[in-house]
Length: 225
Ligand SMILES: O=C1O[C@H](COP(=O)(O)O)[C@@H](O)[C@H](O)[C@H]1O
Image 1: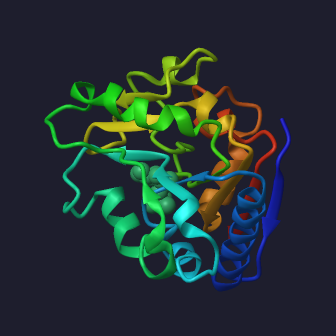
Image 2 (image 1 turned 30 degrees about the vertical axis):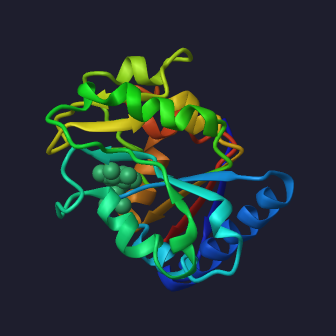
């Protein structure tokens, strides 16, 4: 497994460079295909990248945007990744993009998982995926110790899986390892020494112990302290 580690002098420079790189990849993909799909993470790290990317000039009306994973909470909830996307990415020029939902109102994700997966299916493989990582080495909602992790890592995994994990406050849905790993371009965004150490600590571990390893091959990792 090999990946490229890009270290930046500070977070601001990382954000500018990463937004620029993704914009370039979107333009390239749009030159080759009528529509392209980009999956992005939620959580705390990607907001500043979204703030830059949303004002970039490109054919956003031909871009489908989706999350790598979602917390099963209503869209107006503080912890909703969809809310982050609507507030910080799908604004400005990027408001013309189409959002592929990762949440539908119902109590448990299992109730509407198939509906969500069928909306995503025609968009595979993903053109670009941007992922985050937690200090526990989870990426998307592939958490160490999650109830469905083994199945979500398997080569035959479905597109989407529900997840319940000790480190997660609520049920989740996540794109599975073959979908994330099969993206045509993969970027991982991490900030801080703790996450850098976690990434280094993942080396040599199984994907069950360090789920980030399931998607790292061929990825570009972007890090700043
Ligand atoms: O819960 C989540 O966590 C990861 C990492 O988030 P961060 O706050 O440490 O940046 C994120 O990539 C994932 O999409 C999200 O659901």
